[in-house]
Length: 180
Image 1 (cartoon, rainbow, N blue to C red):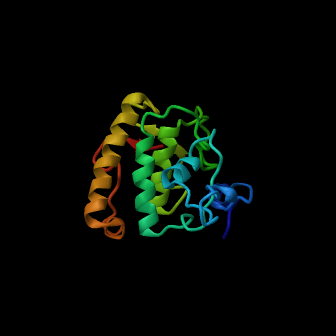
Image 2: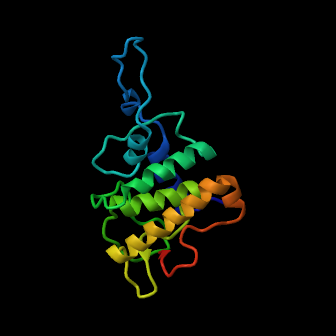
């Protein structure tokens, strides 16, 4: 049975990933053959996170294929250190009563990586990283999370995304950092 929370989450998810007619014009059409060139893949994935960027759409990238997810993770990990405001943030569940500060691009990127990996927007209660001392989105927590995500991604590159999912590899496994 669909609950109000699921409707809200699905609506937000559709907002993030559905093609946008205005942005479908991305790319350079001035090439010799007059065909639209492929948009830069990392720019595309950053547009999903960065509030100030034009939201890009590309039907060939808007899916959960292992190849697309792996490319996306590689691109999104490069957003470490980006302190600007993310396109989304805060609680992702109506069961959370805590009000969080707006998420940074770097935290949003990690959240989106987990969303792509788990194929579930509500893989956590909020777009907030927390450690055992209760520090939320501190520079120390974010640095540690990026270190773990990079290590986890190397393993994914070695064994493949599907095998990593079957083994239930957790990007933050074995650390005191977790999603709220």
